[in-house]
Image (cartoon, rainbow, N blue to C red; front, side, top):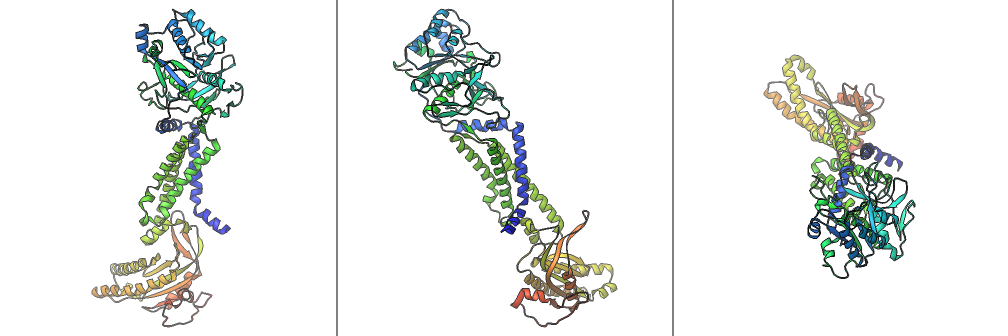
Length: 611
């Protein structure tokens, strides 16, 4: 069994080298950051492709646009008096929480006193502040009541928002809830779901854990993970939440029960405010073509928290790095294996269409698996394993091409096309470094040709030899023999090297018969040219020899070494013109398939065995 295992390991040795090498390079490329952007693109595409979810009826948006400003006040800003009036109208509808996604750190007269009174008398209004960048201070009244959250949207390097934080430390080191988290906590409070400790290592709401984002999660590389972040699981594109205008609220156009027990977010949706960001649903290129109001991104974050806690909607999870590395290694192995099977199963002549497209089907399968995982809440890598699949396939193809080139260079001039093709299909059977192997050897030689060659001009001699060898080479090719060497008018042919077959001895004898029959057309041509007729003797022997590449780096050839080679030459030397002599070892190989006309025992000179 161990021998079989070692055989398999040796046969697939190239795969064991190429697969981890390509995977290692892809992992290094992954941690260099080069794959971050294409992987984000895949993430965005998956977000857009997955089925849209129904609107979250727990959340409604009051959007403020240019028409509100022009129709209600005829100016391009919202005075505190109008905002106070809006909040009073909304409070009358008994919402659980009102999220004011508008910075209100300074008075905007007229009506500031009215707005302060509304803030003082309301326990469910959540304001917003900005800590990062230049920062925007909180409203002092809401801040004093602990009703201010931080803008929790994080913008990636490609200007899109895929992450949001749940808490952050201010410049004094105090932990503060994000705007989305604070609004969600206010909504969950009546249901007996208490907020987690803000300093806890992992946040838990009800039965739901919110693992913190790590710097290399998903496709991210060394991202800033200093705040308690999560990946945003968007519910849908722009306008996926029930939205009304400020005019609708102030002019009492809504049903009486609209807003009851809901979260109502107030935010700018008009182009004039420039309060927009890019989400995975937006192209982002060129910038400014399509954007999403910031209030809708906050609505998605709040909905994600609520639906995870109440509806058990999955959060977006990622693999640990070791699992991701194994995933990349797996697909690197798939790419190499497919090329191996494509190249070596059945030969090139039997390559079918499904084998040709197998690598492409593997890539489709990888994308399909990752997409189905995404539907289940898992963001698993796509681009790195896809590159590993392609990279190992290319590397293995290059390796095979190099191997094929080496084989063709070594054997192409003295092996048949079929044998060379077989070697290309099964190079594992070839050990150029040398090995002991049992083969059948055939040698042939023209009788009396030396005397003839001395009487004829050199041109005639070469003409006769080429005529003779041409017919002999065709006969040898017919039986898949390996012409190891032409020695003047002598030929050394191997059966069983470099490729072994069960019927090597039988094919050697059949080849010898075909070679003797081919002497008839050779002599017909000789007669037409007025040249003397030729006769050939053949000797065949089977035994163990050493086969392999012989020579130096500059010049080498595939050859054989051993006493069995000398024995074959001795046997051939006993043959007369038109005869085929075989050794006892060859006779034992073919058994009753032959009719033997004559047997004799000889002791060849220099050989320590009778034959």
